[in-house]
Length: 126
Image 1: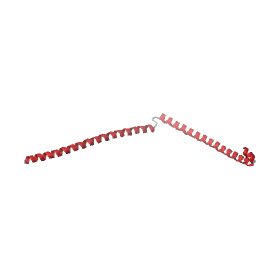
Image 2: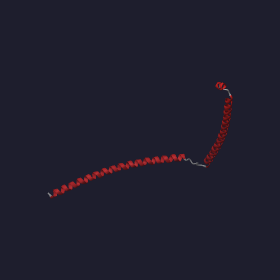
Image 3: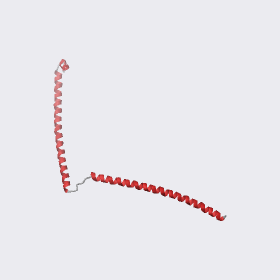
Image 4: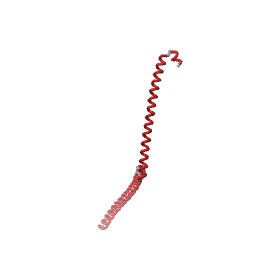
């Protein structure tokens, strides 16, 4: 009887230990799944980072040779010259528009003077 009690107690302990092992196994599997998911996410983020770095290196193009640098300098000088010419052209057009506005204002004033001098009948005809 004493042995049976010990055997029963040992069997109960064994059952508790088996349940704990099962719970630990479930926890380990969940943690491994989470670790795998995290690893995949990390790989995806590293891929995005590398693509972004590649994109940035394509955007920021640095001349690779003296000839390429010289060509880029010539392009910059040409674009600056073209920009200055266009600004001058715009300035000339602005001057023309300003002159035309003055002429229009003068013509409007003359028309007002002339219509003021016309008779009512002549104003209605106009």
